[in-house]
Image (tube, rainbow, N blue to C red; front, side, top):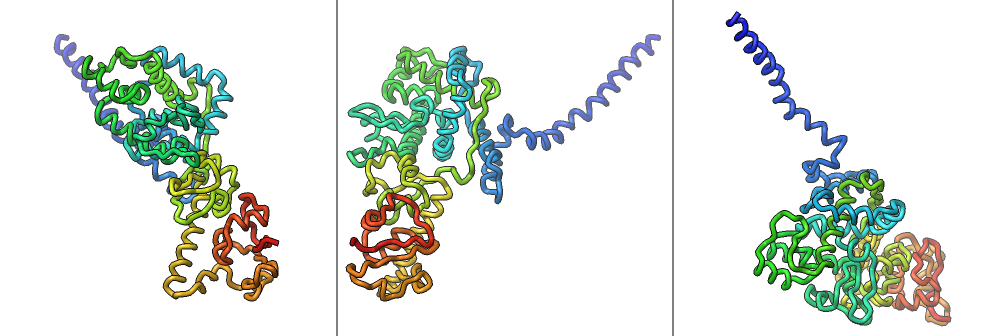
Length: 416
């Protein structure tokens, strides 16, 4: 009996060990299919995210879902339950779910662009949401010495990060230039402070003030999450708000909200302007309304794109069209230069007889009332260049006002 009592536990242990052996091997097999249906909570799926936008026909919800997944995967600070005030502010932001979703939808194209720049500078994902705390991504105009733009930048900071400000252009409202400058600055702050919480303090309170506090009191511990340093209440609250909106993005269902989606061709891109043009002519070349381009580039105060406006922000599909037009102009200029004549400049306007014109009409003097019939692929800038008239003149005498050209449209070339 004693032997039986000893053998029985041994047999049971052996049986349990045998049952446990497959489960020890299982984890090396099971996780492989798991990330496929549910990639959102798994940071390991983040590196594969860039592959989705580059696929030939991605669905817009999938691509935008990847955007949110990448953003969550780049978060580096505390989660929702780290401090009660985080949840308080998260509920304030989402107390009207429909309003929150509408606001986030209107800001999504800017948010996605900011995320790309943050990734470039290796800045924690929470700071992609910093414009939400500052302005909800709205291009707030700067009156006198007040902060301006979606980042709410004061003039002194604008000068430090290299943003130009004058009566024709306010770099603080330039989403592309301002975002690049801010992300570069935040990256530098982290290199000095080594704590993303202090980086947010520095953004709100000032870099040197936070450095002095660290020198005097040392680096703050991980707890409490909101460092209790002798600093203004508004600065502590600023960090709380940033963690709160990050909390909503972490777990939107917890607040009964849904995150919006964005069509792939609506993702914003910065286009380098290589030819002198006005904002309205740039919109025409890009195939978009001037009002839309103006809304995306509020830093430009008028219609003139001066030397301080090296690039414009626009949706991907329009960016591709504008680049194509400028490249066509570059190719024509190069060909004409090599041939020593202007003959090559006529290439886009070949077969004028097919469009109801002949070469004599193109060289008529102004009093003959020259006209040009727009053909597919032509832009106002190329037409103006070919006939040696200004884009502004063509816009004025044809009442274009930034409207895109249409094939078959007849343009007047001379003032009556």
